[in-house]
Image (cartoon, helix red, strand yellow):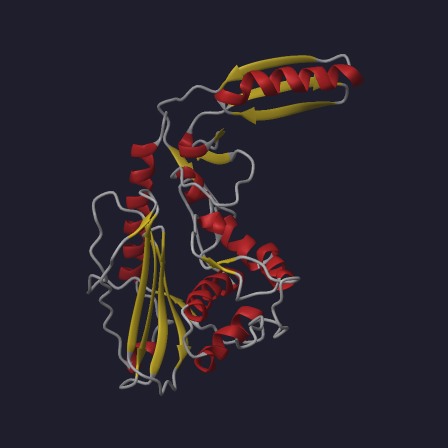
Length: 323
């Protein structure tokens, strides 16, 4: 068997340093994974940096939609903001959280817990604090109101306004494309440009938002929210690229190689997040070499198309919420 090396540091992957790398981040509900891509040190390093950035920008949709993760953390605490600036915190599927406030000398301890754990957390925290302080506490549930509440991320500047992007964000998206390409055992020679970009060694951006308004990339079922990875190699146009679509709204093209000389091929992976299953998807992207040279140009229509996709997912979240 050929020796497997970490694509980031080139060290041999052994039983001592192997790690399960999710093709699509676990924080986004990704299921595919492989121990043959990154060593444990590189996996951890990317997880703490570029993957953390991607999670901070779009990871909240995993919890808002109630999607299960393979590696579970604690109960989510999701921030939502009203137009008047009022903030409330909710759990998975926008479920209201009970707020516990413990008054102790010089400060307050405030916890947000779901209904199932409310009594256990309340009694346990009260007992622990009583050992050190004489505590008083007030408890109440923040009831839903008729206000409109908005999802936000780390780039949100005002209620209802949300942005995505930045170099670390794009590097993490490129890693998803690279993970899948190498996971499927395609020729690594044509992926070196993406490896360099993921590692932070390539200044030129090879990831571009892609929201065409003159073509339907694929058919979307009513209420569907899915992740898509589509890789295509064209000998005629000498291009190799990947199309990534996350939560049926965050679309990018990752340019692998503009001097591609391999065989023509097309490979698509699609995972239905709400039903928890892989589904077949026909991707229709009509790109020539000229298109790739202008991918960095984003029209107003493209921005509007992104907004339409984002608002569609918000409506699905609203239908699934338990308020």
